[in-house]
Picture 1 (cartoon, rainbow, N blue to C red):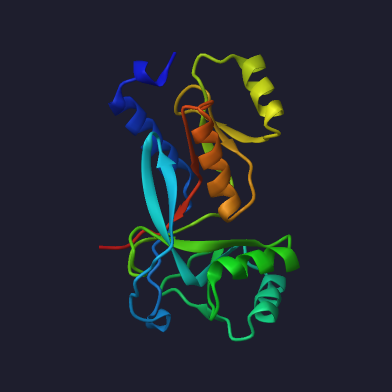
Picture 2: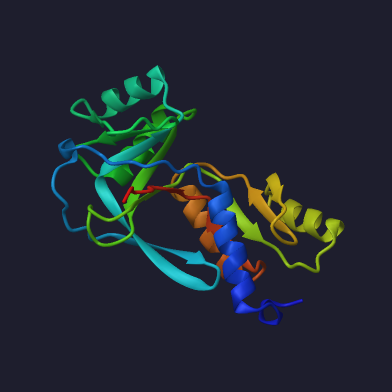
Length: 212
């Protein structure tokens, strides 16, 4: 079975269901300490099914998932002026840092100093820091060929040295695949999609949910 044999409506439903099923997203309204919305210049692509989308890097924010005291120590060591940006509402499992230097470089240095930490650059759905935020806690969602049997799936995973976190019961051969946090997840998803070997591949995004 090929992607063309599945209706566009069904594919969109499956993709939306996967994102809604997996995202642990709470309402985040960061306080005024973050500053006014500013234009962003560095864009990254990702694929929502066969539709290419863009997000923009916020160079002054880093997201820390499952934060601990050691993580705070490492951030302060790498960036003495870094400060926690508090949320108006409690949101377990994530902490935001405002830093003075480039967020992408900060994430790389933090990973080197604290490999057990889960750090991600913060992206926005638009070329402004006022846009809805996204971050990459790790792992990707992959849609394999629905016609593949278990041996074919196992062979593909082994060939690419990939590990399944869980199988999603929202359609045939849809899996959460393990990756590290940050750009590793984005790059892995993009590489798999562009390889032509999968029907779809996307990061398991954390997304900001805003209240009305």
